[in-house]
Image (cartoon, rainbow, N blue to C red; front, side):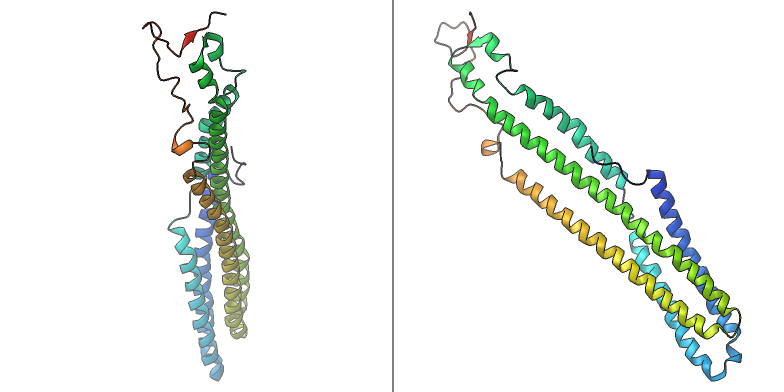
Length: 266
């Protein structure tokens, strides 16, 4: 089972709701900043054209921010599904294989307790190869669980990063709205709001880049798993290990021939 996720399913949904509410708040504050500046535009005379340019740039940046985050909102990810699938691989496959590995030894099998002869000996000779095959399956289930858990954690970390960028941005916009409402503070408010938006876009880009880099590393892990599946390590010619001597082919016990299987008599 992979490591516990940092957020429960309900907490992640709450985070997504807060991000969405934050974007709505950003749009509302942006409109109010523009309106506040427009109300004092007539007083600014020749400076107003410069303020208009700043406001237009600010509006464009806010729209870009909403567009970038909106792309991720269409597919926010389902980390708990990934985590649960990883757990299934560990509990329903890996754990069972571990139990079988313990039995794939001459000390644990009962074959030699009831059977003797060349066929029984040939079968016992396959046990080491069966143990190797089981070990390969167990290692693969561990890696699958690990990869799925890492992707799940990356999704949560990404949205926490987005929320962490939006919250202080809203606080800064409130400050710029207060300044714009004073009249004389409109020009610096228009400029400052744009700077704040550029900053949050930079933070969002950094969060996205970090997530992509992390997931790229996990993609390499997936490639390793795919190569392992195709190299048949532990599975001769792609099949479950079995004796190649042909000594276990005859399973009859009473056809008066020299059967390779014999009930143990001693």
